[in-house]
Image (cartoon, rainbow, N blue to C red; front, side, top):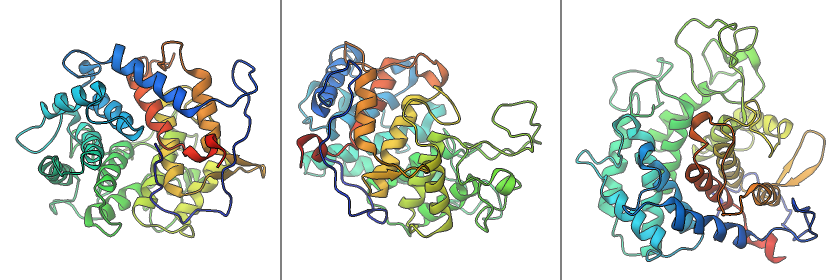
Length: 379
């Protein structure tokens, strides 16, 4: 199913053309998006989903939301068993506070991905059946943002951020999920919650500008993004995430998350934050690893790669070596080459629960939902 980009400020005059790409098995034919997708959906529907509609419920409700969202984006109807059972299961974890979560410690993350799911279902249904659920969930996640009720001001380095369950230590991943949830509800760029989030997102970028007043702004200064702003004294010898001078290393999934968040917050291509983020992407374009993390979080990276570049509105990425890459073709080719015979994907690196094929398959299908239909059809 074709996913429209959220913005066109990074568009070029180029159009996608169907080309042959090398398949992992040395065939002369490019992988077909629909074949890859349908195989993945069949795995989730027939193997991954439990009788109660949940997928990997030990991890909460988030994987179910991601899987159902992906199915809907790829054209499955509300009567598809994966979708119907999944939506019913998610309706069962709607809480009295408006949140949609099975795990109290994941209230923000699970509610945000559930908002994306029910918003997609609402589009398919066309009758507003989830309007009340979405409104209550929207109010819930807005209230979890640090600074939403004036308890701290912009001078607090955590202002505008949100954590897994709410107002504990915020991180870029959860803040990006909040922005994506609001984007799925058509929140405007000048929405107060969005603009507060932009303050936090900007402070998670390795860029020495007026927008980042943390001690880390200029230590790396490569335009990439990092996961969390430390509050403790940094000892570079204690963690691989620090540089020798006490800076925070940029990495792929966070940079695409940050880049996408800047676009959702209305930044133009000429804003120094957007330019610097795209510069980092141009230097670290990679589909075999999560740059800066290796294979850790690889399928989450594919999801942020796809959503981030789709948000830019451009089908091309010009890398630092001057080559233009049709990122949708590259993403499809990579995922087609790593898909298992049963239709699933799984990471051999167990970090961040990616040894779970349900999670990896949901992330892969979400990533593929940003692949334009045009290139595979030769249009």
